Image (cartoon, rainbow over all chains, first blue to last red; front, side, top):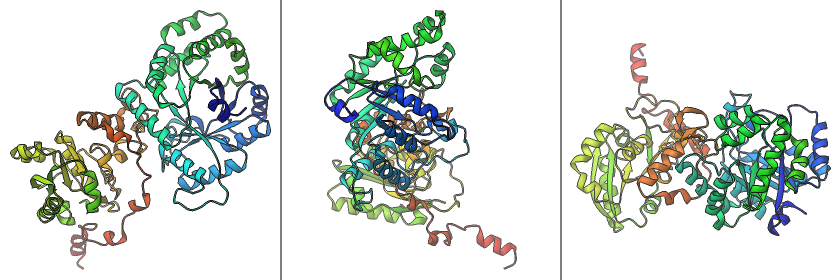
Length: 291
Length: 230
Ligand code: SF4
Ligand code: SF4
């Protein structure tokens, strides 16, 4: 079982996301890896998520390899120029990290080092082209590599883009990402299966597997915060009310997430769970969802 | 003062592929001074394009192409020639090209690359902005600069951070790629969004040392020397 072989064989794939913390304490990562192993096909490790400085994705991915949990290296274009990006990709390969997810990256402004420069030397589509080139045995300048990687590259798409222009732009970019070498997609968090079904109809013809992103809701406040601040995420009022009415919010959050996964299951090729602090509850969510 | 360099003729021909009728627009300001878009270069470009079998529906050299009011009043007089063309080839700086693209509902091809003057920019009247990248990509974007209109200067399209047409940076800032989308849609050229843009050469953005010792870079220098009695 590997992410590539599972997706290629058409299996319904489950991935989850792990966010490294700030500092060198990796106890929790080890615990989470043990819990997730066998329950998910692979685990993404975020790259300085929300532009908050933390332990790196590459080192964390390497730890997951040690724990026999297949990692997906998330790589943003925000913090590194093309030299560092390519070098880190080669480093990842020799450390046993074989999947990579190419992202643009949030602006530094959103994080805890607001005065940092945002690099964006390459963008996500260009990064995917570079990964494809490395796979062929060349760097982006055409210099030959001594020993080449064979990355399984993926990308993200936001099915909830909130203007018609934005929705169209997402589709154009998705097509370009595929042309540049993306073999799978993970989406921004989805809460409305109907809308997601319409999105899937539009991208069906692209022939690339899509894993629907889900974020379990921990509180009403969190849902409202996301609706206000997270681009493309919309938690319907009805869902918020169900959470508000529940006595045990944790239970309700898990139930809602499991229910959502069941609704999404027949629409796409997999789900990508972004637990944001609830990493240890992922097995419970999957139990409830019958996966 | 913005300093420009004409793009290689083959590149201009690539932009015009599939189009037969073109209107050429030059600028009597910085482009004339740069030797890239004054009356002489516009006439040259006209004969070169005609030699390639293109029909030049008309030409004009406007005093300042960065001034939208001027563009509109000048082009109004040649409206027929402009509107009967498939596109406009604009021989001027990035600001001028963007100002034309914003004023006329016609696809505008950039004929020049704007070079970095190392901070010696002066003023221009338009609201369009050019980062002097020396490798103008306005061809891909309907004449809106992705380097200045998009906070992350992305070349491949919108990032995931846009919300309700505004940039991730702030709800007060339009998302540059939404503007590009609407412009291309109005032009019926959304197909341009499918093009895989190569990575930029940021090295070209460094000001050329030769430019930095030119009069355009240091227009104020003689005055300073005079004042200090040199
Ligand atoms: S792409 Fe933008 S920054 Fe570069 S020359 Fe054109 S207008 Fe100027
Ligand atoms: S929101 Fe729009 S303008 Fe802002 S960085 Fe993303 S693509 Fe660029």
